[in-house]
Image (tube, rainbow, N blue to C red; front, side):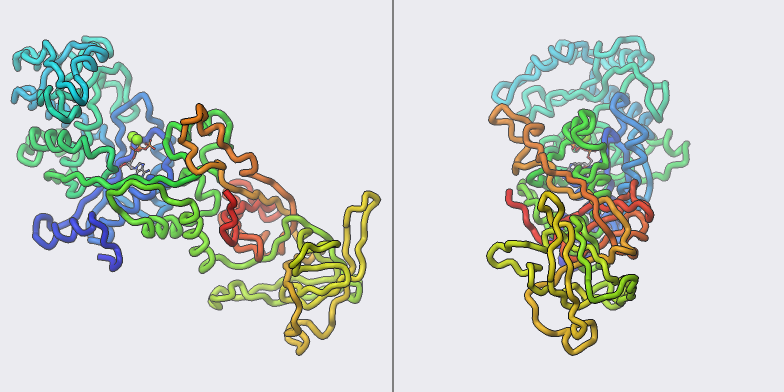
Length: 569
Ligand code: ATP
Ligand code: MG
Ligand code: MG
């Protein structure tokens, strides 16, 4: 095991291994392929795959594809890409639809055992009969059907004799149960729609609780980890596992054995943990889908989205996301995690690993009058102040530079430590300049500064250590590469965009300044980077070369996160 991770789930796993209850850990991550994965899923992925990894076990990726209406092969592909990008590999790739034949045999077994029946009530009637939290439900008039009649009807359901919604197969459990999930829940419904993988052979589909519990049992999952909202489903989960008893009835698994699947069935245990919520975000697939569909963002991988695709494009690293998940920990306590914890994890990872570069996002020309026209130097800059193994690079320096417009003030506010008329500032790694002249256009806008470079302050000289108030970054104009910078901020301007109390919805809370595009300049060694290379642009923040649009000739960098937490709220 990994030292330091001692949440209650890992504790259970340790005890189960120590006591010999299990000789090996098996987990699974069971996404429904009806959308892209989001940061909440990253928590589940890190837990499911992480525990398998830490305890020498196996974790399957299982697509919960029991609803043919909502699934899309595009999501299936993207989910696999995202899991791998996060740094995990599955032991076996499965689909709930691989097990359709087993589910069907299991349902027939329940019917033969008198534990399931075909019910002709409509969906609305089922709701009426179900009762409420304070009122017990009533038995369906079809609850007393004979085994023979139920078997006949269920087979005819499968054969396609009845229209959608005409009948369901229900578990016969307890209409008076205090747990509404146990009041004869549906196990199968009729839906005349071909399945993307299983094909046209099915017009009945298993319900989530049944399929999920049996899927876990089939794969011999030892610890089935899911979020807290399934706590109330656990009795039904156990009911399905125990009453079908796949681990004691391998004959039900014959269709899988025939297809070459290994015999792995065992009795799984469901354990719930709290889901991840982060302020300033929405996390439901429904809302993320709507943001894309309504054009409020530029697609699923918009860098402001909390999908893994979006976070990746924003510049998040897999290591930062894993670090974040480690830091927030695992518990049964529902809470909202502050967005700054996510950003801090990214800063910590990039601070340690991202090379430094120089860039100017709001350029102002600075001309050094005491250097000759055409003067050119190659300065050597370390790529990282704390990690010499990241090496050095050459940075061109010449008479004309770009500096950041906000690093100059004609009438400086109090405490301004950068360049002012007649004042001095250090050019990062190059020397100290004094501003002698401010050039303006006809409208009075500052268009150029003319400065004197103290020749005794050059790198390596004694005067280089002379004290001046500020240090600013710059890029040599002759060699600079023009670049687009996309400056992203939080997509929502309120902590809880899900709050609909004032008659508003999350759409009303979109931050109008969440995306700003500016043009500036890069030192050549930044422009040349491959897509997805992350840098700290000194004094500006952490940036990533855009995964889709960046080219060395026409660079595009996204701001992943600022250097410090500057959000005013
Ligand atoms: P959503 O509610 O956003 O649509 P979902 O739960 O329907 O998500 P699934 O594809 O069914 O999405 O989820 C796969 C796994 O990820 C499940 O085990 C689920 O519990 C887990 N998961 C989903 N959202 C979160 C979250 N916010 N925090 C932790 N785990 C999550
Ligand atoms: Mg779901
Ligand atoms: Mg859900």
